[in-house]
Structure formats: C-alpha cells, structure tokens
Amino acid sequence: MSRSSAAVGGLAAFAALVLLLPGPAAAATPVPAPAPTGFTISDPRIKESSGLAASRIHPGVYWTHNDSDDGPYVYAVDSATGKTVARITLSGIGTPRDVEAISLGPDGQLYVGDIGDNLNGTWDHVWIYRFPEPKVLADATVTAEQFTVKYADGPRNAEALMVHPVTGRVYIASKSEEKGGLYEGPEQLSASGTNVFRRVADLPWVTDGAFSPDGGRLTLRGYFFARTWPWTDGRPEGAGERVDAPWQGQAESVTYSADGSTLMFGSEGVNSRVVAVPVPAGPAGAAGASAPPPSGGPGSPPAAAGPTGAGAGGGGSFTKGAAVLAVGTALVMATKRLLRRRPRP
Image (cartoon, rainbow, N blue to C red):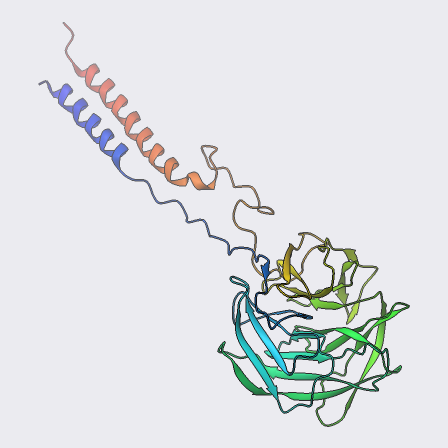
C-alpha cells in the first residue's frame, strides 16, 4: 500500500469513528405538572357541598362541608378518586346554624363561614370558625376558634367568604335579589369581641367566591353567572370579566386550584360533580398561576435558531455534524496534498 493510500484510509477511518460517536445529550424538556381535573364527590355523607378550598399542603385535596343539618364537620376530598380522606370535627364552638363557605388563609388556617341566614336578617350575628389545616389527613377532632360577626348596615344572608391570600383579611359577599354587597372585615379578627364587617362594593347575587392564589383577582359565582374582577387596593375593579362557568342546578361553590391555573366549580347534591375550568391566559386570566408554560407550549417564545437553522432541541445533531464536516474537509485537503506530491510519469 502506498503512503498516500494509507493516509487517505486512516483519515476515512477517523471520519467513520466520529460518525459513530454520540453527540451531547439535548437539554431535558421540563415535564409540566398535569392540569387539575374535575371529580365527583362520592362520600354519601356529603349531600350539600356548599364550599370548596384547595389544600396547600396536600396536593389535589379539596376541603368542603355540608350546607346545614350535618354538624361541625369539614371533609377533605381527594380529587384523584373523589373519596373522602379525612373528616375533621370542630370542637370548642357552638352548634353551627348554616355553614356556607370555606377558605384557606395565608396563615395556613381554614376559615369556615357559618354565615347563612335563609330568613334574610333574622339573626343579628353570624360566626366564623378557624383552625389550622391538618398536616396529616385522617379523621380527627380539632379545637377551633369562634368569631362573632355583625354587619355595619344590619343583618343579611350570605354564602360567600373569602380570605385574601396575602393580607389575610376576611371578606363576605351577601346574597340578595335586589343588591348584594361585598363586606370587609377588620384587619385582624377578634375572638373576644364582635367583628364588624363594612360594605365596600355592590355585587350581584353571589353564592361563593375565591381569590386567586396571588391575591390579584377575585372570582365570584351565582346561580346564573361567574365573573372575575382585578383586585386593586383592596377593592374589586371595574365591571368584572365573564367566566365560562358550567351550568349546575344548585351552583354553590368555587375555588382556585392551588397553582392558580384552574377554577373548580361545585354544586350541592349526592355524588355532586366538581367541574374544572382552565383560567384563560392574558389580562382576563389568572394572576396567580404559579408555573410558567412548558417549553414549546402556549405562551412559550419560539425556539432560537442555531447556526444550522435548527431549533434549540437540535444542539446535539449540530455538534456532531460540525465535527464530521471538519474531518471531511481535512480529508479532502490531505488527499489533494498527497496527490500533488506524487511523481509525474
């Protein structure tokens, strides 16, 4: 074999070896958490689910309660199965009259609103119960604080109680065919005195409400509507934006999922269905969706083009191709030099 043939053969073998070398692994694409989905409450004891609150320490768990005639109970329901994973009995309080709402505060405590008054102003006061969200999901009895509530403009019926997730302030939305209202509680609730709630905004007929997890929006629902308001300086701003809530015969509850990406709408009845409605992106959507959109998904910027015009995911193939191109170029140049050195006949 001539010297030139050996050189060419060696370079060809090296090029083949480069082709077989694995390129650098492409960057792993983050796998987004699955979006919250609806579920059916299967516990036969929960016949009048009248409020919902997403747990912050138990993923996929929602707290609920019956409307009335049940007792001092709160239920934790696993949305993956629809089954009750804990029933909490409240002690240290009186006999509940008409429990209508539940909300989770930034202090990690659950607030239960015994605020219903179907006789429209018969009771001159109502109650709020508060207890820490249990860290372990199991049937248990807990001692709750009891707060007496009055309205500055007189008694009224209400079904919506919302705790702001940043300030911890408690709000109640009254239920009225003529003109409902949003009522703001004191900066801190007092267990020793009466807590006076003052009207800060007019509202339509409301059966439940919830703040987005970052506190930037307030969503309220009634029997025939649902709307979301920007929350600015402690008040709902503007006329609100319509939400595509499901039709439910006894539309009683709404809450945000823990990540803020979804609104969960519930109703009364045995085997009642909780319906998940994604929060739209953009100005009308959720402030408070904690996770950014996955790479390549809606709202993601387009992948930056590399030197070969491939997207970001093609980095490995570009590196290998560049190496092969360099070897091929060297092979051609070496062959030309060797051929030029051969003696002419």
